[in-house]
Image 1: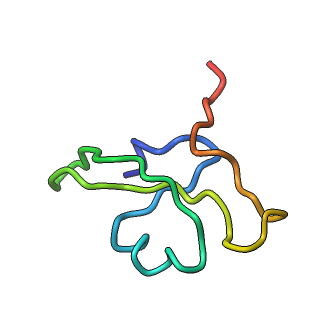
Image 2 (image 1 turned 90 degrees about the vertical axis):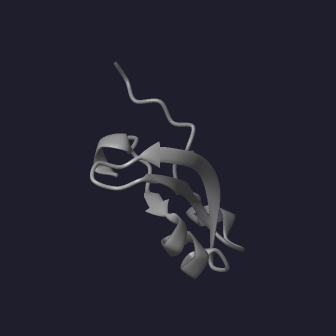
Image 3 (image 1 turned 180 degrees about the vertical axis):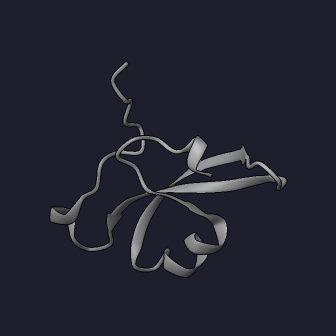
Length: 65
């Protein structure tokens, strides 16, 4: 999963998403191919629920070239 991550973003598996979706907001990234495994659906952590002051970087973040 590390090789598919974006700088400044936290990417989690569907299992982690299911455990934390009530406490945090996520953006579905979609399926990625993970070495040694099948395709996995992943999510980007966006923000803590009910607290806009703790907003995390947008999953749409583009790293500088």
